[in-house]
Image (cartoon, rainbow, N blue to C red):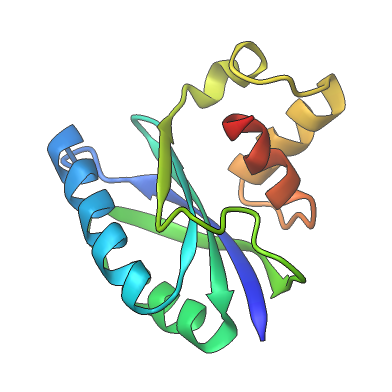
Length: 137
């Protein structure tokens, strides 16, 4: 079943820009093999990742992600079935953002900004995909 998963994590201070590039290269290689797509939003302190693909593949990847020492405090924000992929051609898109000033980076309304800030606090949210997509419009 086609599904999605969004998680939030704390970036390890030792995780360099070069390591982020390694993550993206690995995603591009491995996600293609498992038919996974998605996006990674990251700052100097946090990651927010949106994954989409077959449910079992997403859960297997999420289990591997949880063991990655480049981040900690991993919290699943939302997951569930979807009808279509939001990022069908992206093995892994990425964007560095300043989560403290998202209102300057996107076309989010004040309510969406508040909702996204709640996501960054680890609160469950069913609108996470909609808000993550705003960073790529």
